[in-house]
Image 1 (tube, rainbow, N blue to C red):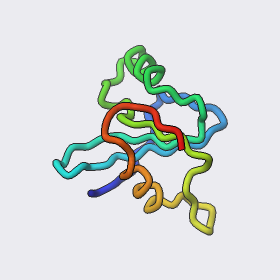
Image 2 (cartoon, one colour):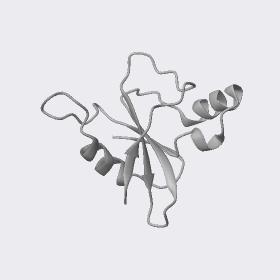
Image 3 (cartoon, rainbow, N blue to C red):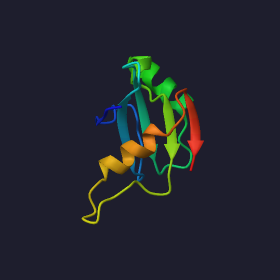
Length: 100
């Protein structure tokens, strides 16, 4: 399973919270977008409404939202993309909200 990161689309307005958007490829080479965030009230349906209002595709809305206490960081303070990808890879495949 490969993992990559991409910038959060403009319509995901998050204030004062940490977010990381990752694209993961499942075994069937199907891409899904996973959002890791520290925002406790992250809501996929609100993101869907914002995407629709701004004319963005439904495909741009994360399939899964994972609320975490903090994003994985390296000792240097930079984002630990390997740990984040491993965390995201363990998440359910469907569109839902999960709280860690």
